[in-house]
Structure formats: C-alpha cells, structure tokens
Image: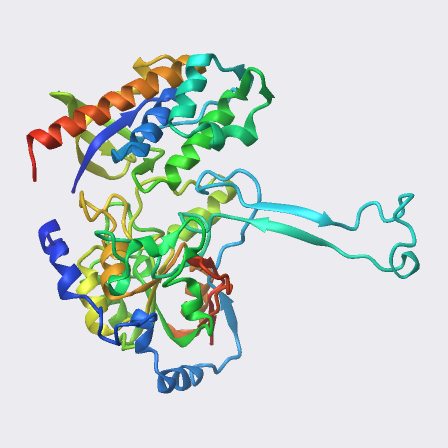
Length: 318
Length: 167
C-alpha cells in the first residue's frame, strides 16, 4: 500500500508546489493557464459521436441531509389562477401569461455540483498569489479571484479516472483513499495519459450510493477522496482542474492542521480549480460503453461578480 | 489512520449541536459525531436564559425565520436542531459525521481516545476535550444553556492548554 505523506511534509508543499508568480504577479487563472488555444483545438477533435453527457446533480428544494441549507425557489408568477377575477385580460387579452422565480442556494458544501474559485480558501490569511484574505469582504464579496476569472468558460480535454471500476467495487470504502499509483493504474487501464491542461475527473462510485438513496442521501459522513500524496502528481502533470463525485478531500483526511489538503494546498498554493460533488455515474456508463475515457470537457460558470465559485453543469462531449 | 480533534461532541440531545456551534463560533474546531436530529417538532417556548445565550452567540438571527412565536420566542425542537446543525455543516470549524459511532472509548484527562466507525471502516480517534451531550439536559431551553456553558468551558480549557503548551 502506498505511504501517506506526513503532515509536516504536506505543509512544505505550500512552498514546493506553489504557482505564485509563475504566470505573473496579477495571475487570476492559476492552473487554467495550462489550457492553451492549441489544447482547446485539440480537445474539440475528441467530438466524434456528437454525444453530450452532464456531470451534475439536479438541484432540488426541500430538506436534504447533505445540504448546507435548503435550496430555495420562490415563484413570483405562475400558471395558476389565470382565470381569477382581477387577473383576466392583463396580458394580450388574457391569452398570454408567464412564470418567473427567485432561486437561492449555498453551493459550497457537499451537495451541489459547483466550481470553487481561487477566493474560496485561505491559508495563513492569504489566497492564491499572496492576495490578502481581507480582499473578500461582507460588503463586496471577493474583490479578487472571484468566479469572473473564468467568465469565458473552460474548454479542454477531460479524462475520467474510474477508481471504483479499477478496484471492481461499487464505491470506495471511506478509508480507501486514492493515491497517485491508483491514478496511474486508471490511466493504464484507460489507455490514456494525463497531460498539461487536462481536467481530471475521478470517480469513487459514491454517486451510485447518492443516486440509490435519493433525497435521503447524507454526505455528512466519512468518504473517500484524493489522498494528499496526489498533489505533487497533479502539479507535475499540469492538471488544469480537478473534479470528482466527492468533495476531492477524503474525510477524515488524517491531518489535523491541513485537514483538507487538496483544497488548502491545491487552491491556495497551486491555484488549482476544483469541481466538487460531480455526478459521474452517467459519464462512467458512457465511457464504458464507448470504450474511451477522454472527451471534450466544457464548463461555464454563472458570471456573478464577487462570488467565490458557481453552481455548474460540466459537460463531457464525445 | 488517526483522527485528532481538539473537541469531540457525541450524543443526540439538542445540546450536542449547541456545543459544536458555540465552540466553533469561539474558534475551537470540533468533530460532531453520530448526531441525529430528533423527530419531535412540537413548538417549544424558550426561557430567558436560553434566549440570552442564543443572542450572546449570534444565533437568534440564524433562527429568526423559524420562530413560530415572538413572545416568548418559540421554535420546534426538530427545526432548532436542523437549523443549527446545518450551520455546523457550513462552519469550517466543525466536522459533522452522521451515521458513525465512537466505540472503545477511554477517557484521557478531559479528552478521550477511541475508535470512530461507520460500520465498515475504523479510524483511531483522539480528542483533547470530550463532551457527551446525552449527559446534558435534553429539554430545549436547558439544552441551550447547558450546551453553551459546556462549549465555553471547553474553549477556555483549550486556550489554557495552548498557553501551557505553545507550539
């Protein structure tokens, strides 16, 4: 079994794996700098079947154990009561109508499929690039490193590393963490190699349990994820974004101080963009059916100024 | 693998979520393990001492949309636990693990050692401080006051420990 790095070793990675100033002092893209125009053109060549697969969960209202707060949807106008007295003849002689709503959610957490911007995590009072954490304020939100950094979206090659399939299990046990050796074994099984600019999507199989339990699924429990040892591997390979069907870090991680190493070292030191809580069951099924684990990956966040991420619906296009 | 936490909170009383939230609010990271929200949502009027504790720790505003009466402040028991627990989930100072139990507990000073298990996996667990909320009051007002008091005592004990053992 691979050896987990000590906490002292992980702490040194804030320096050793740092991308601060690598792409300039005012860099806002972090590891997305690995996605070049040539990479986007190359990724477009992976579209052969004309098939698009969502990597997101549905968002629902109502009480869910794994949600930080309930998602909210308040209808402002609906199709009900159109014939009521006082509402007749309002629009187009009563022939037209419409619906609209307010929606709200806390997308960070363990429920909603979402993108973490580089303003999401601090370490020693700093964000990626050494930006002071105080640049995220109550009044203005994230004044630096908000999600607008990726307003033009992400289009590149995506690769699915299906560790549950590799292990031959429905889902990884909570204490079965994913090491670089597992990522390389999954590469070999898929006949691919992760290259600079790729989005790595890693499947633990936890999505199957979530799908089976539906609204009763509770993410507040120990779960598998990327062992901290993957960080140097992700750095060396030039991975642009990291996604999985959990929230990347295993819980518990085994570290007391840097207890979310992928979030803490990854976002703050490396500028690594994370997509938490993906739905990878459909993608895994498609990859297995087509016999290929690489595809064009696309993602476009909501352009909400000052926000530390975005709910997203990442797409894998074959 | 080993889990180390400054404060471990177990037990099903509403006091458990109060201890976790108040301790985290005061800067003490904690692990809330195995808590289950009660099914009883009958409205409960809160006494003055409970309201004072909620105000002191910034929780009245958190709960305000859920009060069923303003005078006295009244809230369903399940709703109270649900709301405070979700704020624990959102708090980076609190780790919430449901569907787990802590077994083979051995007291060590004010803390505990044991094993956390989800039925399939096991983790060695070490906590500097330990609170079993089942030993605290379960009636909501008393759970709030006793939970807040225990949490602040834990915060003080942790601060004392840090002062005595600087890194």
